[in-house]
Length: 88
Image (cartoon, rainbow, N blue to C red; front, side, top):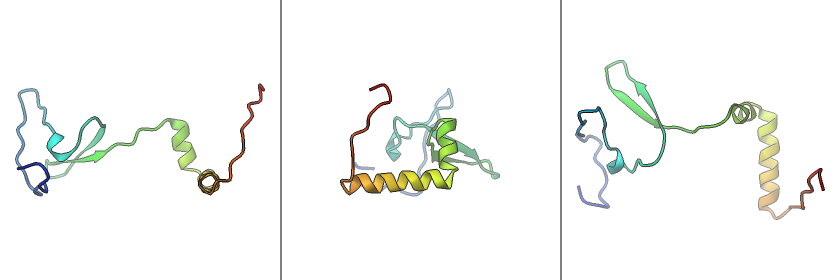
């Protein structure tokens, strides 16, 4: 396989003596993955998104998501103002 060529849907990879496989040829580097074991004995890999419990609560709250979306839209439109810390 040459650089720039599309990756075939099916490819054989080598598993070393410690059970490791390199995913670099698929462009998967420096990331975390979730491994799902399939009923047929295969595995599926999914890119992981790591977040704190507070972030998970935020994203589970539709009102909080709406407020953040409105704030981002406002900022993208240039509607910003200085933020003053309570300690100032």
